[in-house]
Image 1 (cartoon, rainbow, N blue to C red):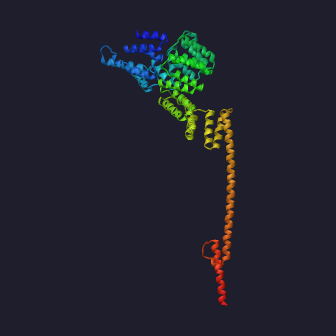
Image 2 (cartoon, rainbow, N blue to C red; image 1 turned 180 degrees about the vertical axis):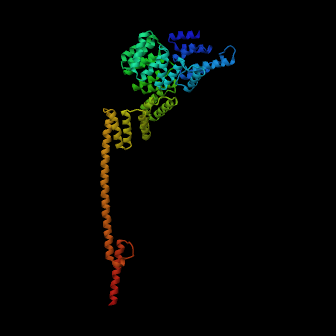
Image 3 (tube, one colour; image 1 turned 120 degrees about the vertical axis):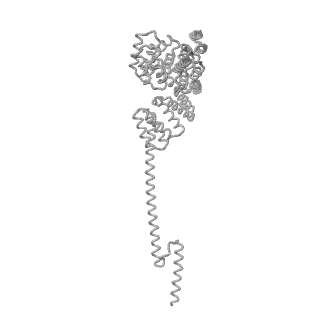
Length: 477
């Protein structure tokens, strides 16, 4: 009864009341999987709330014909099955444990629902190729398992497989035109080939066929964002946020749109709301870091970028998916004038395949700040090899070449000054030697063994000795 009451409230868009009815249904009978599925599928709970709700359920109430061990095993099985349905942004280790146990101990490794949960986890980790392999395997067994298609289509889009998207959309349109997933597939295909107006039309059609179809609402909002229609995008994302209260993604997109409009304070508020719903999404932390960076708070930005990269590594996310975050971290270090750290980060980006003219331009700017214009010239040439029309790289290259010329001229002038100084010094040494040798020749044998004395002292000695010789001459007479 509680489950049916929740369905009625959901039809009336009274999602708060529907959520409570679904929760009551599962509390009354923990095996009411339909009510639990409605809570998860419609994202009515945040990731933290999902785990708290799971821990509050009384799985020990499950009994199997008076057999204690069988009852305990049934309780454990139900809890593990529910665990695989929870948000993949929170506690992926618990999911892996439940998935391994269900796959091996209960021999459910080929179960489509369990495989879909695994594919969903891989998608959140940006491991699109691995997720696509799983969805392909499921669709080979059951070609029209429509619960698989949202993740399958998202993977195809991320991997830029436009031809496969066309084939999937064409097949679904021919065979199942009554399904919302069909028009979602058509919309994703048009979005992938940059036909935004057509994509919007089909996303809208999918959302009208099922008002609670989350992917269609998000896709519909994305079409406005792609065209720079920020106000309309904000309106569409706000609708998605109202319909799907537990997911943080609409709040992130609202923050992005306000950031694009330069409404930093409002963008920060939306991102904080998203952070309250989910604290372990690297994408969210990256966006929060970007806002801090544009608020001239690079030290705070560094903390968010580093946290995003740490979480991405912790959940075994694909490293190449976070090249942009590493790039942002490098720019934040540059703003803090921590040039060596910034260079290390940019070199990591280049090793991961981020061959972008902007990266080389940033490296060139740092090298110029470190008074290394010759190295900057080499790096900026690489930037222009990638994008010859890059105005920033061109301007920096001209400045670096000017500094190189000035440095070469200063070096030549310094070398000339040094040569003049050495020549002058040699001349002074020669003059001093000549004066010393001349004085010694005038004093004759009397000066031998007396060592070096001052000029005044020598003249006095000569005068004394002259008087002595005159006295000796007078006595002889």
